[in-house]
Image 1 (tube, rainbow, N blue to C red):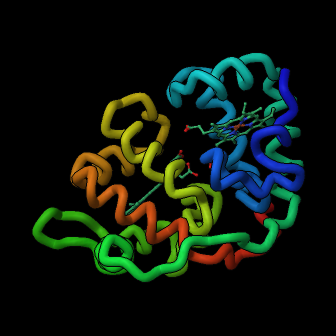
Image 2: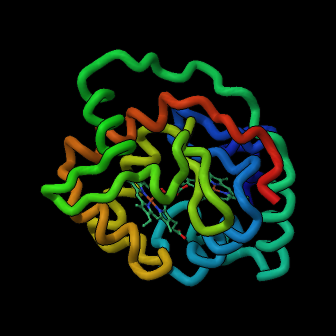
Length: 182
Ligand code: HEC
Ligand code: HEC
């Protein structure tokens, strides 16, 4: 079993280049739900599946407690928000698109993408490639672990360009909720 830190960083801050998400400061129940989802296959992933299956349920919970309690490191090298894809992403994130029946992401993920409670994870500062991969996974059906299928319905209405744009927008937002995911 490789150390979590080898991919997710020493303090769980993630790795933008590798596309590894930040774990530090995410809500304990969210983290536990994701590890359980990797283990039961409702979130199908070739790396995280075997890792989560190799952990006992109480170990998955203990890791969730650990990462929820870590402080999120300050954002490092976040992309500069200046191109048109970013503007399109900001519009989708903050306003949504009525003609596509697309709600604003901010309605659930918070006005700054900081996450809301245990159900709605933060998007701010997560690697763009990671965020886009999640949207593709919902479209393809390889991630189907979300309550009420909320994200599947949304991802299906995003074109690939829009998914890329909104991922770029959130990746460039600073991590505002420092620490205290618990
Ligand atoms: C070899 C690299 C690697 C290692 C080691 C690794 N992970 Fe991951 N992890 C990933 C990748 C890649 C993803 C993104 C998966 C996806 O796209 O769905 C991920 C995603 C996650 C997520 C989902 C985060 C979110 O925002 O939904 C959690 C939770 C997680 N890992 C926990 C762990 C824990 C705990 C360990 C150690 C027991 C660990 N990982 C070890 C590569 C790794
Ligand atoms: C109606 C509420 C709702 C709206 C609106 C919403 N989401 Fe989500 N989103 C969720 C929920 C719930 C989850 C967590 C699913 C789970 O439990 O794994 C989630 C998870 C995610 C994740 C995975 C994060 C991670 O760490 O793995 C991404 C990426 C995401 N949403 C992007 C978006 C984008 C982009 C939009 C706007 C286009 C959006 N969401 C709008 C409810 C929503």
